[in-house]
Length: 337
Image 1: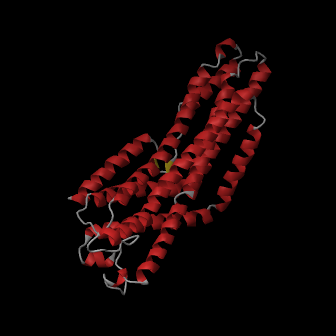
Image 2: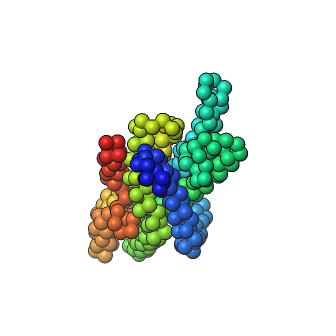
Image 3: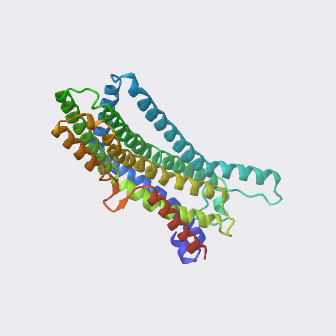
């Protein structure tokens, strides 16, 4: 990268920056996993306990639970496929282009997994054996490390946030039928349990935010920088690299920021829906003043939106996703000019 700066080769400098940012993000996630290992263990144990308890729920709760499990699997598989295709594009496209060039081109050439100026080697020497093969093995290993780093930690967030969303849906289901029994002491016990469940879900959201706050600010910065830089590579006139991988990289980065924005917005929506659920729970049939006041408190509390913030600075929702796309496009036009 220093050599690219000295030669004012900004196109190649941006290409190296993209890989540097991805590697830095993977290392940061590895460090955060070590630092937050107790908190992550507590989240996993809590989710295990919750799903064991869900096994004893009645049949009318099963569609909600099954729907969340299927949604989790679908989103996990989708993200793994996006990350896998993007990662494999580096070695696969390099291999295919090298074979095609050797077989059909009048002036055959070799394509590196990631085009880079190798220290102590000239531009011609880096394509000679065994340097070319050794560097291909090394860069493929780095691609594998990045793939693992962008699936494990990120997938953990998807599982955690959907578990929190499931908690909210289940005690919202309880709230719908909380007034079915006209017995006042029974209704009070149900309301007390609802409040405990609501507080438990709110604490879970706070724990998730604590564990993933650095990651959230990381994907925010990663999305803004990587999308703009990847698009600038697509539009670059420098054809020393294979531009197809940058299309995939841009798409993967957009999906990477879309998923947490969508999932967090879903949690916020589920919390807000509690106000409508509480209002429609047939409270008008209960004449106990204390119960009516409790319903009013639930409605008031539900009207205060619950958000996840990255380091208490960036609020994640769909508005943020739209803003990131606009910022990335502005960065793209700046780099292109």
